[in-house]
Image (cartoon, rainbow, N blue to C red; front, side, top):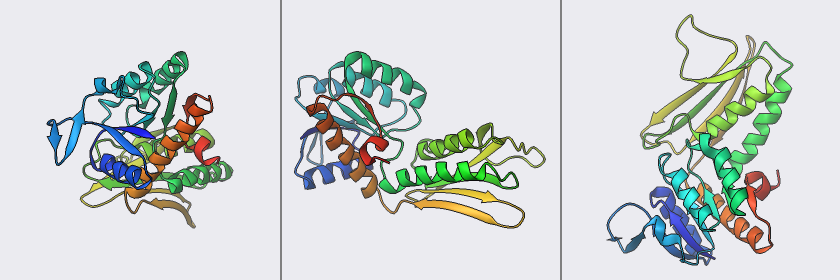
Length: 254
């Protein structure tokens, strides 16, 4: 397949490596920068039109993701997005996708292990709803270059817990001040360190014991491979005449 990479940071470069290894063609690299940098010719988002690409893979920033996705959908390019912290606009993107008869794949995290963890988290929360003596917290740890906090993955985890636990009405970011603890709030803690690919931990704690569910990302390779798999899946769906909005549940059939 012919692919446009939108965003050429660390994830974009890893996606390119995997695309090439799988025999795909990187037709466009769309990013900020000079016309050429290290042998890479940069394109502009407008260059997508008429490019003949089969799919675009978008990993940029919360400020630019929405415009990039809208452009893809408006010109009929299927798009896989992995940018987080823009999803307040997700419903309008999904509606635009349907209106235009487009194809859009979104996940907050493309790791197979993380998506299995999402399922385990939902099931655990359903089980723990019966046991009010357990309080629950969520912690995520990432590298200092990560632009959003909490991570998109942590938001998914927290939302699923709130949906399943009657005793939690909302999640809040950060440690509670002493004496200000609200038992109806789910505490989500974000930590940024110099070297930390990504760790998400859910902890249920009672006066007598604790249960933890943890996922550690060892490298970006798993995320990039998942995004490439999503692009392959999306192209195959479009070829079969199936369009619309897709997720990792569609890809992994969880």
